[in-house]
Amino acid sequence: MGVAERERLVDRFPQLTATELLDRFHPPRRFAGVRFESYVPDPAHPSQAAALAALERFAVDLMEAERPPARRWSWRRRAAADAEPGLYLDGGFGVGKTHLLASLWHTAPAPKAYLTFAELTSTIGFLGMEAAVEVFAANRLLCIDEFELDDVANTLMAVTFLRGVVPAGVRVVATSNALPDRLGEGRFHAADFKREIAAIASWFDVVRVDGPDYRARSRVEAEPLVPAALYRYIEDASGTVSVDDFDELLAHLRRVHPVQFAALLDGLDAVVLRGLHPIANQGDALLFVHLVDELYDAQVPTAASGCRVEELFPEAYRHGGYRTKYGRCESRLLAMLAEA
Image (cartoon, rainbow, N blue to C red; front, side, top):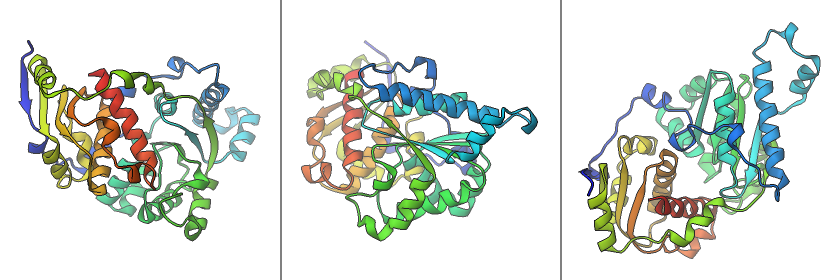
C-alpha cells in the first residue's frame, strides 16, 4: 500500500508571474529526453523519414547561422536566403510530430522557446500583444506545438504576432493537424480571412508526416476504472496525489487563467478524476481539453472513473469546428489512462 499525500486541484490557484511563465517555455517532461536519434521512422510511411531529415537540416541551418558570415558554406547561404522563415509539420494524431519538434529545440542554439499554441495565445492575453512580441522576438527559434486557429480572435492574434516576430529574424517551426491554408476550416468562413490565412501559410514550408496513431495501441486497456478499482488505485498510490470530482474540477477551470494550467499540476505524482460524464457545455469541454494537453505533456499519471472517453464529447463537438482538439484529447487521455 502506498503512502500518498492527498490534495485537490480545486484548492490550487497558481499565480505565476510573467518572468516565471517565460522560464517554463521549454519541452515538457514527456519530451525532455527525446532527440532526433531516438525518433524511429516507420518504413511503411516514408514521409516520417523525410520529416526527420527536414528537421535535421533545419537544425544545421540554425547552427550554421551562428557562424561568422565568412565561415559559412556559400551553398548554405543561398539555401537560407531562399527558404521560408519556418517549417510547418502537418499530420494526424500520434505520428511523432511533437517528438521531432522537441528534438529540434534540444538541438538548436539558444535563445529559443517552446510552447503549445494554446499556451502562446494565453500568454499573449496575459502579457499583451506588444510585450509578447518583444519577449519572443528575442529568440532565434520559436517552436509552437499544436498550431490551430480556434476562432476569429485567435486568427487575428496569430497573424499580428507572427508579423511582429518573423521580420525580427525568428525562425518558427509549428506542428498541426491541418494544412496552413486550411486553418480555421469549419470554425468560421475562411473566405472572410483569406488574406490572414494566406499570410500565415506564406511563412512556412509544409512538411507532411503520415502514419497511424501510435497511441491507439493503448485503447483496449484504457477504460475508466469502476469506483472500487479507483479507490484501490488511490490507496496504492504514493507521493502527492490530487483527487477531484469531475464537476467541481470543470467549475474550477473557469476560475483559473489558462496560462496557469501547467502550474496547476506542479509537484503532483498522480491525478485522479471521479465521475467522468459527457460535457454539455463546450466552453467547459475546451478548458478540459487544455488541461488534458498539460497533463499529457507533464507526464502525470492519470486515473478516472465514470463514462468512457469516447462519450465525453457529444458527436456535434467531435465533428464540428474544434474536432481536431477533441480528437487529440481523446487520443491523449486514452493513452494516459492506459499508462496509469
